[in-house]
Amino acid sequence: MATGLGAVLGLTGSVDSAPAPLPPNIVIILADDLGYGDLSCYGATKIKTPNVDRLAAEGLRFTQGYAPSSTCTPSRFSLLTGEYAWRQKDRKNSILNGDAPLCIEPGRLTLPAMLRNAGYSTGIVGKWHLGLGDGQTPVDFNGEVKPGPLEVGFDYCYIIPATVDRVPGVWIENHRVVGLDPADPIIVSYVTNISDTPTGLQRPDLNTHYGADKQHSGSIVNGISRIGYLKGGHAARFKDEDLAKTVVAKSVAYLEQHQTGPFFLEIGLFEPHVPRVAEAPFVGTSQCGLRGDVIEQIDWETGEIMQALKRLNLETNTLVILSSDNGAILFDGYYDHSFEDLNGHQPTGGLRGWKYLVFEGGCRVPLITRWPARIKPGVSGQMFNLVDLMATLAGIVGQTVPPKVAPDSLDLSPVLLEQTTNQLRHNTVLHGISDTLALRVGDWKYIPANAKAKSGGMGKGANPDDPRFAASHVTQPLLFNLANDPDEKTNVIAQHPEKAAALQQQLETIRRRRF
Image 1: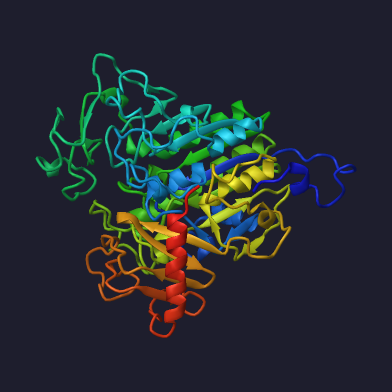
Image 2: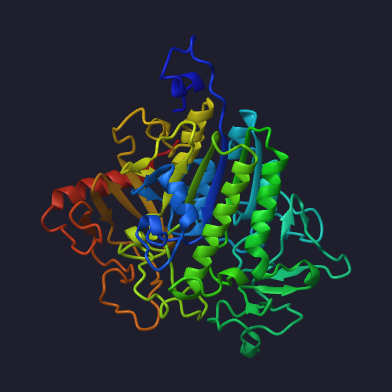
């Protein structure tokens, strides 16, 4: 799996004669629901992302980058553990609520824990969405909130528990809710309406931004109804208009405090996940409505992080990785005109499907890596799944990860460091809602007949016959050749039944593998 630091980085000279390279600082910027076609460096013309474009121009941009899942919680689980989340049959392959228990076992060797073993300070700012508490008793947001990030390898955290469309809608620093008034305790329920204010169903007129569907019409916080019910904690509730600037401020503060390094910082952005609220400087800046505006807000956040690294003289020896936890989605519970305002923009870059689905549009994501000291600028067609970050970063920092610990993670550091042009990952399993699985092997993509998932992203006025918008309700197995058919329009299983049978068997073998 991972090899020693000298073997990985010292290929330009002998280990004895070459000075040991400094371990890089590592920053992962993980957007939320950002599509393959949402950045101008990936072909977008109605959305401008100059800071991300510069990151791509100065680094290695991947055209075959994949999220481990087409939904958030399982992708984040896989990124931190090196294991496909669908292998965990208890609770790790679902989209967690804000009061769900921690879905990573404390004490497990995770990505931050591995880096901490290598001498790194480890922090996370922004979205968490991997649960809090032990599951034995309800999460007490009024006391110590744990176990959480600090129990699975992070030294510091400043997080929001789940998605911003779910209660409780507060920031947590380490083990405590930020700004909580003890006289106004927080109570959360996803079952019973315990709210002390009207819900979106009761008073839809109080939604000051836009309306919402039934699922997203629970407690109204900051003029937006959310999933679930919330009582109390008024002083601690976040303001949607402040989320981006808070992520930047806390991230930059972490960089300043740990500039002597080495450090690892995961930055979980909230955009362009719903509910979409652009901060004042970005309202109306794109040519495709609110969703485009918050993507340009992502670009600003990225630029601020890059400027801080440069100001602190950390730019050259910091490995920055930018990606997304899954593919794009348009309508996802809020009537914010995301479909109506597209103006020709293609969030998936023309790929079929959306978030929740195992088609390419749901799983293929932007992936950019920049490390000026070691990574040469370019474009790579290497298949790279975010589950590979565990073994890849272990290879870079000289740590060994036992195969049973991160069973699905491959060390792709030779690709980043231009030590090979060979394909190191030959297949990847794609995971969608309702435990849908698909398998890509080389240019072939196989989706079993039992793959069923809800339709997503279509929006009012979409053509349901357009294969890019089709719902994933597969009544017969699908086989695509992505080299000839990147949009997955033509099922060629009748022409290649033997290929489909082989991929079906390979997927089943991977699924049943035990470690």
